[in-house]
Length: 292
Image 1: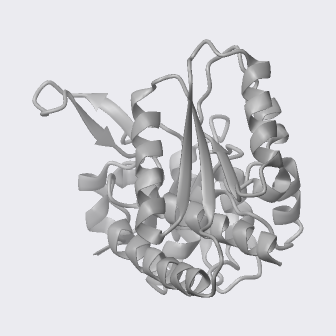
Image 2 (image 1 turned 180 degrees about the vertical axis):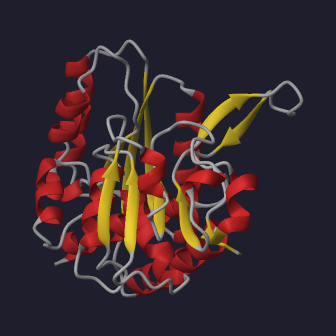
């Protein structure tokens, strides 16, 4: 069993990006610029956004963090996005999800300019992805593909089982794994809450991507020997014995499943770090388009 270490793989991506940014700056260009909007003070969202800002600095990007109160009106948030759309010095825009219930996430996503949609959620980005055209790939699936590439994990002809059908991970992951790509060409099954005998389907999987948001859902009896396990889940579970009062759990029962796996991602330290790497790569692509 080999650990797919997100720290090592993401560092490799970041070093490549930093070298490219260094060359661009040396040629007299401005730095790439990512703008993030954080609504409210959700603890997990605060952590994610802080990590994104830190990674921007490490690579040589500029970043702007816009904080809005949880009771901000939908129209005020949309106007903030429109201002960033019009700013020629902003290359990428992300609005940290989830949003307060009074704000429509689809409306927010559609308001972000497709040219600055570095999260890859805009309908234009999704449509181009499905058609196999160049586009911004949603950051988490992109990060997973980058991890498969870093560790040179063969996927051609394998049966991939994706648990979860969200627009953020499950659906785009199924498209990428089935695409004609060096780390695609899988036969893909998507499972969800209405899948009969989900465990039996999972046992057929050479690759399992768990992205349903239920801590330790995937257990040893659901996994065949030698499977490749990609754990996208990240849930705070209360634990009085932990220093912070909680522990981070993935969707896979790691201690049970890892002895049966050929490769497995840990939580934390796996896919989450690769998500940020994917976001940074998307931001550099958006920036280079503005230079052209």
